[in-house]
Length: 130
Image (cartoon, rainbow, N blue to C red; front, side, top):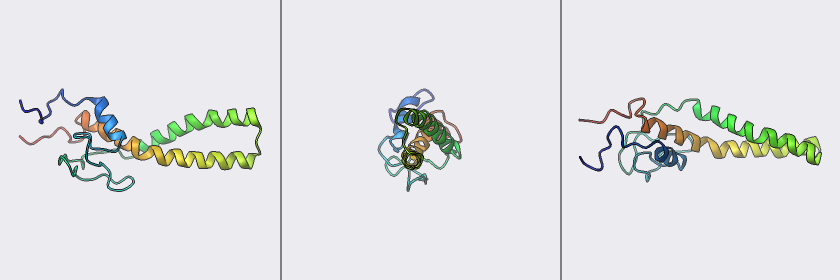
């Protein structure tokens, strides 16, 4: 068997997710997976892996909202109880924080979800040419 050709058991989930988190191709880990901020390339420029099969859709946005809400919600309550800042200052700081955290997480979560799809051969990622 050729070492470069993946088989059904050679696609580890963790490695694919970490490569996707770094916004790299889940197959080779070298090529960029995104063309812009969230636009996925059709193929990897390094290894040629087809990436157009991905179906991340609304999953990354949903998970980003879930994570940001679970991180900043309790933090907001704690800061308000512990320090009693002016509500306008509190709203301003946490608004900027939530936007910044969302912008940081969104492309990384999208890459990780594409890595999961590639690893599990979902949506056409398992259709290698014979």
